[in-house]
Length: 404
Image 1 (spheres, one colour):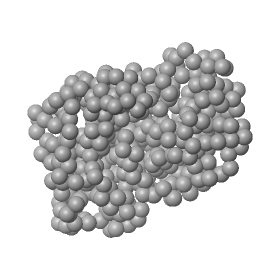
Image 2 (cartoon, rainbow, N blue to C red):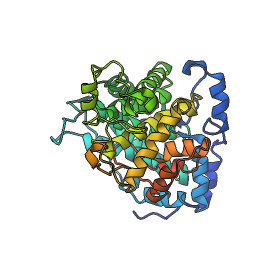
Image 3 (cartoon, rainbow, N blue to C red):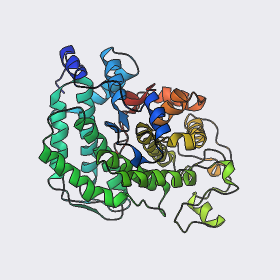
Image 4 (tube, rainbow, N blue to C red):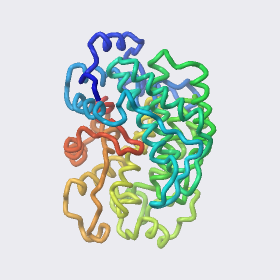
């Protein structure tokens, strides 16, 4: 792409002087805030605090500056992606129409990729200190904020959630680290999130497959923090608490999985159909395991994103579901890595297409809590650097590997 492997040291020093002290709730600070906060409205939000904290940005920057692994390889991977180009051009649409299945849509791929590009450019700015990346992130975001009005067709909710998750992370990482976002552009972008995205996702989709509900909550909590919207934050927290137990099974749930709250999926026959024909349940199995690991991975990633953002805000959702999340990670990591599939599981066949979805939850459970996750540890090491799924997961080895 015609740029150096790494920006000059001078630029890095300048960034380190921009007020990025080692604060935030990603480490020990999170325990203090969690102890003081019963509800999200009790304390102001910590910024930046959408998935990635100030402390994590500082740590990633230092690792890359020292060319330490796996962070330097992850940085090079990000820097070499199409999203990192100085010449990246956004392709906004006034109406994003995303029908179900493989039918052609309008603006769907472009929206997801532009949101990921904005997030990539925001991270590049934070890592290198090159202000051109912050400018590019803002250009992409403003291009969409000037024209987008709504999302339509059957996949509108899922599309909105995927894009909004990345938009909010990008915006948060720029707003609180860069001094060049004008008030007018910031207001325009905030209005876009509030009007064209938040209403589409905040209520979830209880009768859909669980990955919809969880990524909708991921988008909701991300936008809530950026917009300083405590009511939306509380919605996302409630959504996590209801949907995670209904998506990842534990024997303590009983003979059958938990029914999705508010849905009509309640009988044994309905639950078995909803779980893609699975009739035997074991710790860590997900509602979509027998569909494919890709969708189970989307949900693992989304659940971790919600919990991580809440953690930065002093709400310990991880603590409520740490055993369930560990079981889900270990279950899918074991079979993704090639273990023989027993006959009771999905008829003896699974689709091993898990994406770059383990870093965030693994970092918390293993790194912060010291829990043992041998299967996940091996798989994560094999997957590193975990890049992007081109939907809503991006560069999490860089931001979360060993980021306690």
